[in-house]
Length: 455
Image (cartoon, rainbow, N blue to C red):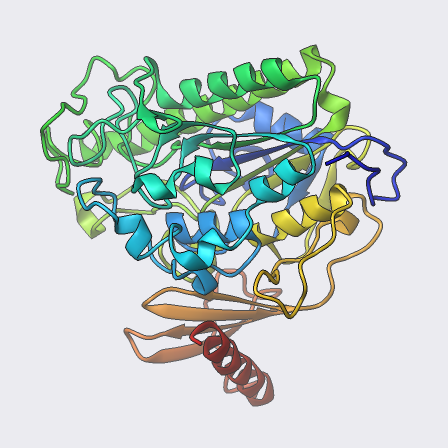
C-alpha cells in the first residue's frame, strides 16, 4: 500500500516511526522526577522534559496479559476473553488457543502491527509477549515481521528460562538463546532493528520484562540463576524461588537497580534515534502494563516497590493497580515540558496511530470496533479526548471512572464505594452516601457495560 499524508494537521507529509516502550510492573511511585520515586531515572526525566508527561494514564488491566491484549487491539480485553494473566506453562500445549490471544475472536481482530504493516511499516516485537505460548499465538501471527523474546509471563534475566525450568527465548518461531541481561538484550535488538529499517517507516514494540520478578539486577549473574529442568514456581525465599535469588530485605534495593537499568536502556535508544537523525520523525510512547507490588504475599516479601500516594498495588483496582507512569516524546510535534491530566488508557494507542497514519477507523458498529480514542489532539495540544466512561474488571472486582468519580466494587468483600479522585486520590473516603445520584448512575453504567462484555 502506498504511504499517504498524515491526517494530523501539523504539517507532516511523511509517516512517523512509532515506538512503544512498555515497562512491566513499573509503579506510579517507582520513577524519579515528577512521579517521586527514589530511583535515579535521568533519561526518563529528560524524555518528560522534551515531551509530554501524563498524570492520569492507566493500564487497561491490573496485571500483564489483559493490558497487553487491550493495547494491541484498541479494545477492552474482555471482548477477547483475557481478563486474567495467561498461565505460563509451555507444556500445556494449546493453552493460548483455548483461552487467549490465539482464539478465533482475536485472530479476526487486527492489531497495531497489522494496521501499520498494511500502511507500509516494518514491524518488530522484542520482549515479553505473555499472550499465549502455543505456536499459533506467536507474535508473527499478529502483524509482526520480527519477534525476539519470551512468550511466558516471566523469565530469568540471564538464563532466559521460564519458571518451569524450560528455555523461553525465541527468534520468530524457534528457540534462540541470547547472552546478556534481558533489559539490555531487548534494547539492543530494538537498536539493530532501527539500523536495518531506518530508511522506511517502522513500528517497534519493546515490551520489557523489567521490572517484573525474578528480581535480578544487572550485577546478579554471579548469584543463583534458573537452571533447566528445575521448578521455580515457589513464592518462598530460597534457591528455587520464582521471585529471584535475593532475600526479602534486599528486594527494594534490587528493584531500584532494575529500574535504573531500564532508564539507561531508554537513554541508549533515544541516543540512537538522535544519532541516526530519526528523532524528529519518531513518536516514542513509554508506559507500564500495570502498577507495582507494594509487598508480595504479605509479610513474606514485606517491601517491594512504590505506587506513590496511590492506594493499592498490582492486581488491585484501586488506583495503584492501574494508574501508571506515561510519557510521549516526538520533538517538534509534542510540546516540550508539557503535562496532560486527562484520563487516558493503553487502548488509546491504536486509534492514535490510525489517525496519525491517515487510516480509516473500523466501523463503530462492526466486529472490529474500537473502544479506545485517538490521543492525537492531546499530543499536539489541539484538543481533548471526548468525555467518556472507562471500565476495569478482574475476576475479583470492577471499577468505573467518569470524570473525577470512581465506583469500585470489591466482589470478594461484597462492598461498593464511590470516590472523588480530584479531592481524594488515595481513595480513602467513600462518598456514595453523599452523592447517591452519581452512585446510581455509575452503578447503572457498570451493569450495562458488563452485559455488553459478557455477550
